[in-house]
Length: 315
Ligand SMILES: NC(=O)c1ccc[n+]([C@@H]2O[C@H](COP(=O)([O-])OP(=O)(O)OC[C@H]3O[C@@H](n4cnc5c(N)ncnc54)[C@H](OP(=O)(O)O)[C@@H]3O)[C@@H](O)[C@H]2O)c1
Image (tube, rainbow, N blue to C red; front, side, top):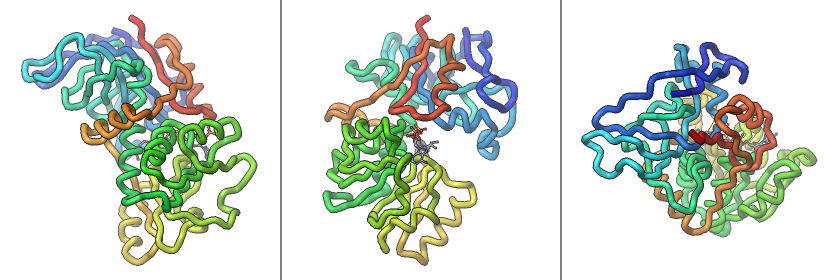
C-alpha cells in the first residue's frame, strides 16, 4: 500500500510517498481502508521536531492522526464493528503512528460510526480538535449567558468546534480572527468579533471571565491584562514547564492558568455527535487528493485557513 512517511525532521519537503505492506491486525483491532485524513498543527509540530520530548526521534515516521474510512477486516474480539462499516477515528499513538496511508490498523476502541450525513473529510475532521473543544468547555465549568468568553484564534479547526459548542451553551463570546474569517466567526456563534490584523486585543479595556488562546501566541502573562480578578486562561499550547508550574501558581492566584491536554474518547466524541445532530457545522476549507499530500500540508501550514483541511484517498 502507499503511505506518506519521512526519514528526518524538517519542512514539508521531507514528506515522501512510500510503498509498505498492509498492516496486520491483532484480535482487538480493525483494518480500515482510509478515505480521508484531516490535517492538524500537531502533525507539523511533530514533523519539525518541536515535540521530540514526547514523540521521540526514531525514523521512519508517519503522519496524520485523525481519519475516516471503511472497515476492511475486524479481529475476532471485535464485536461492535464489521466489514463495510463507515467509521472515523484516531491512530493509537498520536506521537508515533500515522493515518495518511491507504490502510490503517487501530484498536476498535479508537473508532466510532460515521454519521451518514457527514462526508469522510468532515468525519476525519472531528476527533482531535473536536475532543479538545469539548475538554475546553468542561474546563470552563458552569458557563451561561452572563459568561464573557474571549476566543483568540477562533476560526481554525479547534475554534470552529469551540465557538459552536459555546453558542449551544449560550455564553457571550468575543472571537479574535483575521479580516477574511470574521463572517465565519459570527456564523459559528460569536456575539462580537475583533480583527487581529487591525486591533490589538490586549490594548482594549474590556475584561473577560475566560480567555482561551488557540493561536499559541498570546501567553498567560499577556492574557492577564484582559482577565477579570477571578477568571480562567485556557492554554492548549503550553510550554512543557507550564504543565507543572501552572498547577502550583494557581494555588495562590485568583486568575487561573489551565493547561489543556485532550484525547479523543467515546465520551467526548458522543458529545460532539450530539452537537452535530443539533446543528453543529463542520467546514472543510479544502480537500486535496492523496497525490497532493505535500501541497495539502504546505497549504495548511501557510495559515489563513477557515475550518479544516483534509486529504482524500480515492483508491
Ligand atoms: N492540547 C491539546 O489537546 C490540543 C488539541 C488540539 C489542538 N491543539 C492546539 O491548539 C491550537 C489550535 O488548533 P487548530 O487546529 O485550531 O489550529 P489552526 O487551525 O492552525 O488555528 C489557529 C488559529 O490561530 C489564528 N491566529 C494566528 N495568529 C494569530 C494572532 N496573532 N492572533 C489571533 N489569532 C491568530 C489563525 O488565524 P489565521 O487564519 O489568520 O492564520 C488560526 O485561525 C494549535 O496550536 C494546536 O496544536 C491542542
